[in-house]
Length: 190
Figure (cartoon, rainbow, N blue to C red):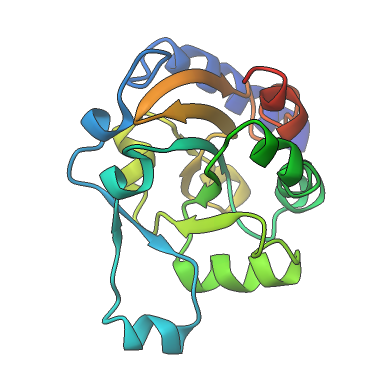
């Protein structure tokens, strides 16, 4: 049953990829002009900041950024492979002039905060929640994972972005794949 669901998800994902609004050469700030993300934080930090959000332009403009998206916090491949592939290479990213390494998922910022702390990755990687999926929807990087009880989520992907412009974009064929979006791969593409 699980393999049938993954096979069906892979087929749907492949058919959707040809329609993505984001691609190499695109400007993320143009593709998602009125979108903001929520920096990972505790509930108390959220209250004291009046539940502030960070506009996409503030994340990317004037910066060299490596960003990766994943289906969700606390899930298998995301926790065991995806995040560690960036955390373990953070010094190499910094040596290549990367200002920020960012992890984003369709989760609330409080879940992202707890997960980042559990992975002991919060000091190396900036974690952001895309609580309503608006960022991923703007980039056409969403996938319906209702069959796995996850609802609308992010594809597994990575990008190298300079001043908002996408220089490299890698999108996995299926949410359980970990072939092209890891830290080692994009490190070699910068």
